[in-house]
Length: 342
Image (tube, rainbow, N blue to C red; front, top):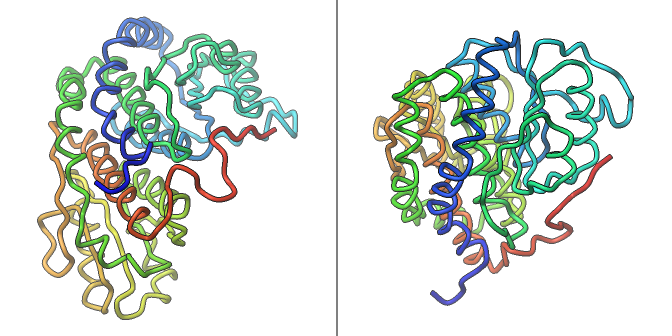
């Protein structure tokens, strides 16, 4: 390989980092979820920004599907700028931040705890202000991440979230599927979608679609297109893209669809195939499409974990695309690794 970036190496570290997290955080996850079962919260809130917020969106769908509890994303500025206090008694607040440093995330998590919520931090920094502000901390054990674009910290944060849900629900099938993720991520990291890279090499705009848990993955992918390749990507639910955004689709307009092996696959495939018939250059992580081009994907042992293998393959793809476009994905312009917002 002519160029080996930090991002490339960190993507290849995802399986090992996931294994470290599953082993190193098992006890705290079991302790935390034992308390959650005992207190039986009425609802869940999440607080996060950037890639961590996409991990929170994945957690939201997974929690609502497994626990039947409503999950709301709370704006960090509610506490940090506006000083408002929310009624969070008998609830759980999940704060996600790889650095655990952002003052607004910390303030909201701290406020949630004071207002009666059980605050749980998912972070790569056990000594961070976020960890100190929360009742429980689940470390993601990702190790140092040198590339500005988060990859292994996103995946390990998302895996930590789904592991919390699996142990909370005591869902053995989901627990088993999570335990096998490191080996599946090894396979997923080998799929870097050269056919999609060829299509996007000289393009500057596209849609990224998902639905349900895979919508969180489309959000993360759209961010990475902007962050690493300077491509304007917009993420939509496949249920929403036809409500107005579709008007800008013209012949050869690129569209990437993330489909998991769950109840949403048929609807995503149907939308993607329809857009292909309208002239779009559409790609999808499914073998059920008739008109769109299928991308290789690594199947997992559970519908809820399928989206996680898709993002690993996407990371392998986007790192190569950035390099092929002459961009160093480790140092996106105008960005730094830790953004601290108030």
